Image 1 (cartoon, rainbow, N blue to C red):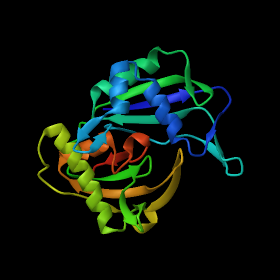
Image 2: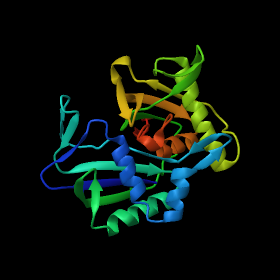
Image 3: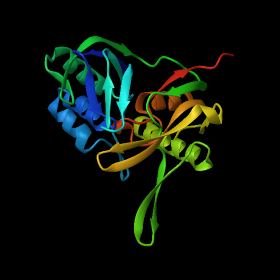
Length: 248
């Protein structure tokens, strides 16, 4: 399920350029069930040693100006935020909370709900064109000279596609209790359509990719990707996209 929120505020909204943690905090703070919120934040859904939160969110969508000298981004009202999850309880908790509350804040700025819409994923397609709403991340951790190093992968590499599929396969197993039947592929529409973004999440530097891509795979895998995000670090605001099925 997916929510689209239109948020209003007085005058302007000023945030750090790297604001993912602020939006993530806004989401967690507005899950009204304390037990479920604690479970999601501290544990999540387990796959061997991995933990999945099963949600993702977009960038803040709207008119903005960036000030690289001050390290800030200033939005004009209104803005939109898309929050997506494979767990209906999560969406219901979050939606109920933001509708009821009179004291919503993004950072230090008071915001209010202009509108909120919920969407179920009802497509049954095995291919489509997607546009990223937040950067897509894949990475490997290696040990060099006794120190761990994170290597982020570009969509132009073979390992990128492999890691995207492996991530979706683990999520599929948690949800369905078995391996998916088919592989999953993703490729840029063309090299000009992809753009690397460097994001700072707290003290961590993350490299992700925006742009348009063609995806193919088992319809259930595409649904999981749509609801939980493509690639890694989804609950930190990565891998959210919108999809347009290809015309036959």
